Length: 359
Image (cartoon, rainbow, N blue to C red; front, side, top):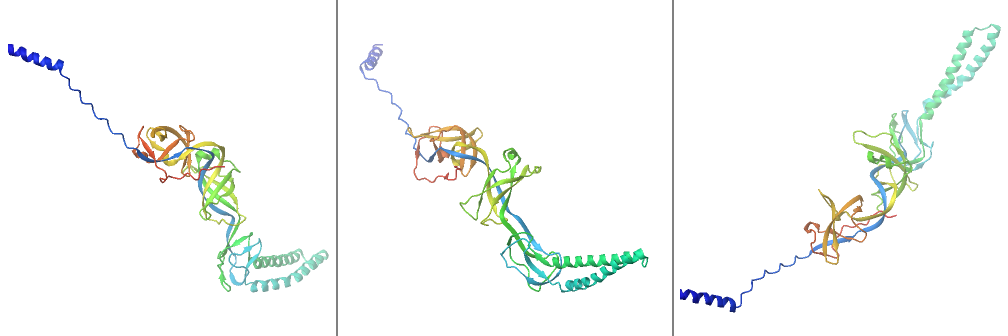
């Protein structure tokens, strides 16, 4: 019993007089490393609303020249690639037989006419009957009709340009026997190009006649050709829900050729200031669209939900959620979350936003 009391006193003395051991504090977690990102500021630009499509060019007029008569080619009056005027002769076929027949026909007409007039006088005296006059009239009329037919045949054996334009490659040779429908050359009126393109039916109410268009052709990088809408098809193709549209582009310099394709925009009346960012800045998911905005003071990012509008040329309109000058992440978002520390890397490859329509 005495030993227990002594042990208890010793323990109490150690507790009261001794220095208690301090509890070990947990070590501080190391700071997360900054994530390298590329960033670009949201820009306020003058944005032109457009409806975009792909168009194909057609000449104002174009035709494959061919004849309706058969015969040997005796004269070629044009060269490949030359400009011609409406009515200009291009090819002559042999008309020897037709001219001989016409000459023989016309030699008979005066005598037939004289005989008809004589019998018209004789019928008054009863020397001839009405049937004699009718026969004479019929003979005269037949000769005149044959004459007109032969002249028309001879005229058709000279192929002429139906309108002014530029001829293509010559497809006929001297001495060749042409059949009706054989092609002689292609003729195109390039003074105006007609652009045919399609738009969705949802855009029908936004397109009007005489609205301006802009077209860009691969053959002329960086050059824009301007025109206007001239025709809107009055029906929708129900299988696809699209509407054919036609526009015209002046082509006085004859740069454009039929069959060329172009990226084409119909310029709409809507026009004003918009906030735009590179398309790569916007993330799309089930909850909506968002961007990461860099807080330059703390070098962290914040995920911001946005409402996007029109998009083209790697630029997206932000209707709601951003202000001009906000620095948004355009590369490196996959590693980010709200509050992630970041380091904006200068010179990192960025998706350029160089084609924002500014007017």
